[in-house]
Picture 1 (spheres, rainbow, N blue to C red):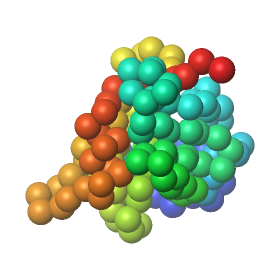
Picture 2: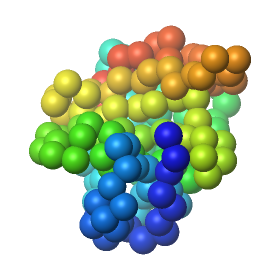
Picture 3: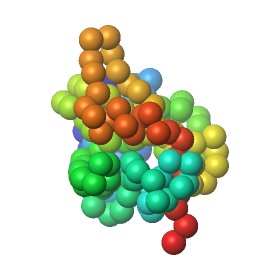
Picture 4: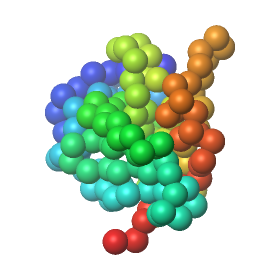
Length: 151
């Protein structure tokens, strides 16, 4: 999937993306502040068991991943605004947290509010033939589904 780059907040990018309407357009977000994605902020763990890893924390700065006692931060993500179709009216948000290049959104796809359930997170493979995961990416996919931890 080829992404459309936009450094404006996601809500302002949406009309731009609609104008060029590719089947599944992605917008590069550099941090999540002012992105209108506040509803996905929080910490997620496998099946909501918050003492387990990997953990995923979403905030203004982007996403932080805890696995094996190590922390990895991703400040730039691809937000796939039209991934579920141009007429989608649900609460789900599809994000690719590890973009590789302008034309490669990465090996992992995350669906926040998966199945139209607030706080649910599905992490899936986006591997093309011949590609492989990093150890962190493999762990994130393996331990899905996730649920938001309670504060």
